[in-house]
Length: 325
Image (cartoon, rainbow, N blue to C red; front, side, top):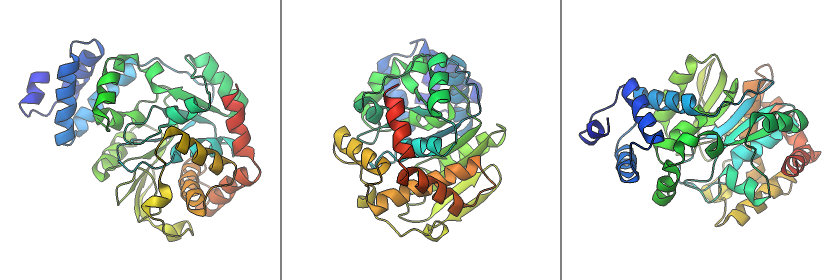
């Protein structure tokens, strides 16, 4: 399969599955993996390739059996926008508002601070088994699944990806390979074609899902322009008026130069001390995720519920309790 890729061949779903098994078993060496990643940097991944890679990673993952239905809030990354940790913040706000969350996350690829980076900065100890994850879920209504611990198949790929220093096709797989298989998913993609592919893949999953892509390139609703939104029930374009929020610009979403910068913004949001722009973009994404879990609620009702968790310090309390657990 590696040789086929190098000659411009688009893999079948089975070939992609077998290739991922080859990466996991280290039949593909680091040099070959670098070339493979480079190929997908220069052309779009196909639907059958994405499906094959996804299926292989799920089969190889350490399974996580959670005791109640949960939601994941996750983005592909790779948009090169270096925004603050919007999806991770949304996860804590959702949990505080009563939505059980199984957040799948990793270190940052195209931003300074991914979800794992910021939680590690605060001293969170990543859990390594389903028992501990279920404990966190029961105690705090949220658990955090650090991807490298549950996808040992990608251990060899980690240093190669780190050395490349930007998003790769592996990032496209992250939101699809949560080993807990959450029944509710809020997913951001940096690319409109990938959003359509995700929609096609998830249509047959039986899950409730919402997929968002800001048309100016963000893997979340950025409020800097219109966003394409897919769900298991509809497809639409949303703008700022749908949230009653103002139009933002790129600097409003900037995540800082260091993990410490990102952590400062993170705490400011949870303690209701953030800028109006930071709070609004976070509330917009949280509201859409909550609406996926509670389709009977309006977007405005979801915004108000989310806002209440900040004003009341509920979200910050959930965060503190999880970090100290």
